[in-house]
Length: 223
Image (cartoon, rainbow, N blue to C red):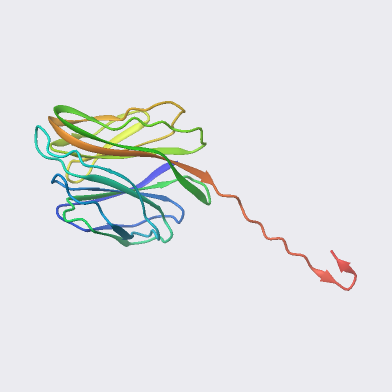
């Protein structure tokens, strides 16, 4: 498993430029709004993905220190490589789009979502927490998540997770390999404030190899 690309676009936006690197890779897209009780996206198209599927959403509402609005996530499988644009519709406000690409390393991969969750952290704390994740027993699995923070997230790492910053200082993380145990992804922001988070686990299974058998017919029969 490998994390191969990250892209993000902050400010009021409905598009994100990406460059997927390999057909069959997993694409994860998170969207955040800076206002509570905003509507969810109704459609996503482009980005080298033919069909986007919703993971879930969390709307923590007005918090104690700042307001962090709706956060949601979608996923899909790369069907075309090269420069492309993700376009989202249906939401009145989009303050950030954040996307990540993962490569299982197999020639072809079946991807499935194994676990996901959302969490609103409406307290004045520096800790940013995601929902606990429980991997199933699959050979290649990856955890991925996003957090929209009132204040600046802090990049860090704690095996198996790497926590990084978007251009707007929100947090995204990924982690692999994973064992069959419960994981509790946790990062920080400074100073303390509210945050909304969403995370998921995906399994990437090698697709069976299709082989072509050619049979020649001769006057003497099959050979």
